Image (cartoon, rainbow, N blue to C red; front, side):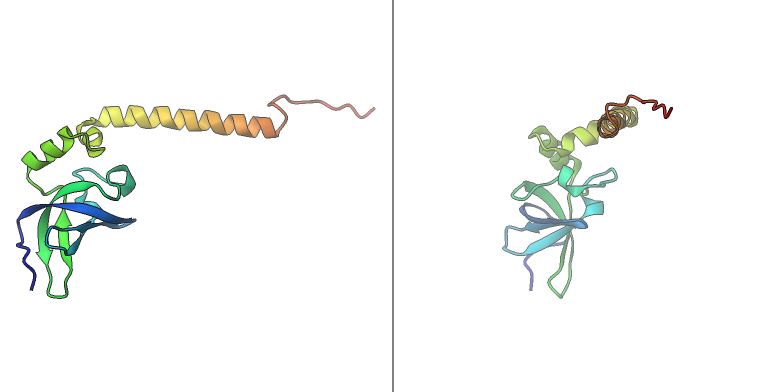
Length: 137
C-alpha cells in the first residue's frame, strides 16, 4: 500500500509531459499525474509553457487509488507554496500575475506580428508584392 496521504503537500520532480498532464516522481519513489487542469489557476493551453522535465515542484496529493494511480495538483497546493514557487522564478509566475488586459494586449501584438510575417512571406512569393500589368498587343 502507498505511504502517500491524500491532502499532503510534497515536492516532486517532473519526469514526463504529455498533452493531458505531467508525470511527477514523488519522494517515496511513486509516480503521480498532474492533470493539465490542475497545473495553474488559469486555463492552460500548452503545458510546456508552465512545466519542463526535471522541474522541482510542490504538489498536493488529491487521490491515491488502489490500482497505483496517484492524482496530484499544483494549483491546489497552498497559496504559500505557490508564492514561494513564483518567487523562485517559475515560468508560471508571469502568467499568474498577468491581468486580462495585459493578456489581450500581448495576444494582439503577437497576432499583428504573425500577420506581418505572413504578408511578407506571401508577398515575396508573388514577386515582392508589386502588381504587374501585361499588355498583349
